[in-house]
Each structure stands twice: as C-alpha cells, then as structure tokens.
Amino acid sequence: MISAAARQSRAMMRRFLQKTTCPRTTQEQTLLEKLERNSDSEWGKRFDFNSIKNIKTFRERVPIAAYETFLPYIEKLKQGNSRALLGSREKILGFGLTSGTTDEPKFIPFTPRFIREYKHSTLLFVYRMVEDNPRLLEGKILSVFSPAREYKTGGGVWCGSISGWIAENQVPIVRNFYALPNNVMEIRDLHARYYTLMRIALTKNVGTLITANPSTILNLVKLVDQGKEGIIRDIHDGTLSVKGLVEKSIFQHIKSHLKKDPLTAHRLEELAQKNDSFIPRLYWPNLQLIACWKGGTLFTYLDQFPNYFSDSTCVRDIGLLATEGRLSIPVVSGKDAGCPTIDSVFFEFIPEEDENQPSPRTLLIDELELGKNYFLVITTSSGFTRYKINDLVQVVDFLNQTPLIHFLNKGEHISSVTGEKISEHQVVTAVHDTAKEFNLHFSHFTMCPCWSEIPYYVLLAEEHELGNRSLWPGFIARLDERLQELNIEYLSKRKSGRLDLIRLKVLEGNCFESRKKRGLHSEERVEQYKHVYLSPSMDYHKNFPVKEEIT
Image 1 (cartoon, helix red, strand yellow):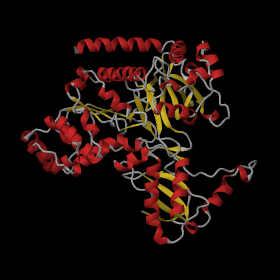
Image 2 (cartoon, helix red, strand yellow):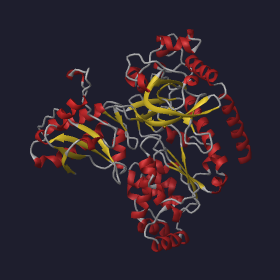
Image 3 (spheres, one colour):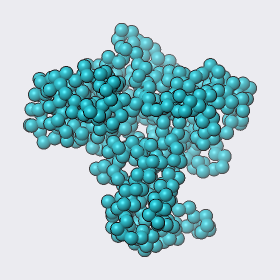
Image 4 (cartoon, rainbow, N blue to C red):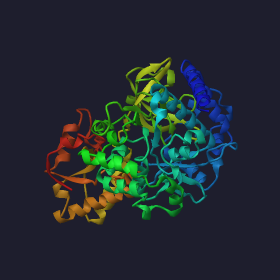
C-alpha cells in the first residue's frame, strides 16, 4: 500500500510541476472553476459570476476586499445559511478561527472542496519531504495542532482549527505513521494537553516533528526539561499526573498509549542523570526533520534550535500556511521558499509600494519580478474573492515560469512575533479601555514587541501621563488581560507561554512630540503626521529615552 501511495504522490507532483510551466493558464482555470461553483450564491449573484469568462472581467467587476466586506455574509453562514457565500453544490463544514483587526476573531469558512485542496497541497509537501529524507518513514511523525472543534455558532456550525480538521480526516494508512492519537489535541487545558502529548511522545521513536510555529516546539522542549522527573515516573508507572485535567471521554481513547514502560523510563532516567539538560537530541536520537515556519521574525526562535537538536536534524520550511488555506508549498529541494498553490488558490499581488493606494494595482502570477515584495490577494474555495490577507511576501526564485515566494511579515498595522497578529486597532482599544478603568488619559503611546528568552510586548508611555506610580503594575496586568480578550491568538500565545506579560517602559519628557517634529517631511503638514500606536519592529523602543521598565 505504501508503494502505491508513493506512485500516486509522484504522479501528483509531476502534474503540479507541469502546471508551473504555464501558471497563467492554470490560474485562470482555477479562478473560473471557483466562480462557477459559487455563481448562485448571494455574493456570486451580486457580481454576476455566471457572465465572467476571464481574469480581466473578474478584476474589473469584483473589488479587492478586506474581511469586513465579507462579514455580513459570514454572519449568515454562522446561522447556517451557506448560500450567502457558497453555491448550491457547496456546503460549509466549519469555521477556522484566526485573529481579526478588531475585537472579534475572523471566521474563515471551509468546505469539502477547500479541505480536498488543502490535503492535496499538503500531500505534495509531504512527498517532497520524504523524497529528500528517505529515513523519515523509519520513525513516527509527531504533529502538533489545535483542536478541530472548539465550539458551535448559533446556527450549529463547528469552529476550530483547519489543521485539526485535516488531521481528523486522514486515511488510516497515513494515520499509522503518527505518534499520537488525535484525541490528545482535544484536551482543553493547554498545559495538560502539552504534558500528555510529550508523556506519550517520549515513548515513541520520533523521526519527524511537524507544527507551524517554532515557538511551540521550544515550549514543549522546556516543559519536558522542567518536568522530567514527573514524566519519567508516569512512563514507568503507566500513569498520567494531569489526568484530573483531561476530559474523561478523551482519557478513555488515549489510555492504551499510557501503559507501563519501565525499560523506556530507565533509559530516559539515565539520560536525564548524565546530562545537564534533558533535550530532544537525547531522547529522540533518530529525529531526522523538523517542519515549521521559517519566515518573518521567527529566526529568533530558530536560532535556539541548535541548543536542543542535533546538527543532523534538518529544519524545513512548512510553507505559507494560513487559516485561509495553504498558500505555498516548498517543493524545491534545499530551498525554504514555496511555490504558490496555483491549482487551488487564485493569486493576485499588490506591489509593496502601491499598498496604501486607494485602488492599488495588482499583478498576476506571471508578472512578478525577482527580489520584489508583494501583498497577497487571494480567491479561494471558502467563497472569498479578491481577499487581501495582509501578508507581505518576496519573490526569491522561480520554478519553471512560476515564482517562489518567501513570507516576510504582516502589513504595517499588524505585529506578529509568534502568530498572534495583533492589530493597531486592538492595541488602541485595549489601552483606551484599560486607561478608563484606571482613570488615566493618554495623548500618545506606542506598543511594540521586544525580544527576550520569552518575547513580550512593551507599552511606551510618557511619565507625566501615567498618574500614580502605585497603579502601574496593576495597569499593565489589566492591559494584558484586555488584549487577550480582544485577540484570541494573543490569548493562545499567552496561555501557552509563547509570549510573556506586557511590560511598561516609562519615557522621559515629551518624547512623542519631539519624534513627531523629527519625523515630518519638509512638504508635510503637522496634521498629516500619523502617530504610530503599534510598531512590529523589535527595535522600535530603542528610538526613545527610557527612564525605567516596569514588569
């Protein structure tokens, strides 16, 4: 069966590579198929999808849109009316959740077609991964993802993680390669989920570690090192010390993976006693590959990997993954850049310099230039058309006639150190609401990320606006809580320890006014100056004289 699956994957890869020789043709077919399937939706009727026969007409008729444009239609989908965005042949399976620019998360619908396309792209990635590292199949795959089902909308539609949904629907032959039962990822308590995950994984011969965010990997590694005595004891005794935090129904499904294993426990205990740190290169000596994000600011996490993993462990970019879909596949051996998923997503690209124009021009897949940066605009099987997702990518190479892209960062009003995607609107709302609770009023402030062993956000504020010093610790603690309330991704990263508590940097004098005067261009009027309330730069705080930092 494995050889049959390999032949099938090899044929899929050949077909995909052939499409990269004619990307414009492939893209037009991809677009028209999506428009045809959703032509009888409310959105499709609004723009008369039935009469659109080419890319040119589509771009003339349908505007570029932010998520807020689709929100009224999403609300109908949440109540069970799938015809709002989807055609009569489509049905909604669930919503993927991700951070929005306001206090509400974004609900991204996924359909059977969407799932098939996502799985197809993932299979291409896995095929190339195994082809480049044949020994991967000798060990188990440890895949870490979020639950597929977290809660239901008022209309009874499940909301959760697209990666969890994909994992749930794997074929049995693929499932056998995985180290864990899927039920582990459904444990609600995050510490209990991670502990249980590693309690089981330490008894397995793990050859591949897959998760999107490298910060998750470091958290798991540190959890094991700090709690090694308890985990090794659990392995020896066949117990689970966090059992009380695990739902009973889930425990029943996973208890067969928790049997007594004195031999493994003894081996692990010897390793722990002989070494200062209990790290993966000791307990997973056959780990061949780690697949995770490598773009953007994530190098700060990747730089720590040599402290924990063997030099022989390859770290491979997993590609541009978003709740909106798999947008690129690293299919060229030795390159982190990914090939856009041209046969499942229709792409347009806004040149970086045009991003703030009222009607920015867009380029097509065969019009991009090497070394240039572009913002992505996508049309998907979720019903979204010309959706600007605010991801900035760079063209770093070409595969046949198709550009290879590398993720750089979110847009200028978004900050994302480890996937939290905080928006300027959320920062302003959080500071405003918290200041009101503490009877404070800020004329200006800025929030930006800072790097440490655990990264964190810092609020830059002038001393004369901060009021009574005794309130400062409580103020920043409540500010952190409020930001968690506004951004589900920030909440997740705080709960999992991937981000630390917000800190306050107290600035001297009228720093912001001075910076505004320095920042004005000669032809610019004062009223045109835009204060920066959120900067994604980790060095931004260095522009100001800091009197003290409050933690």
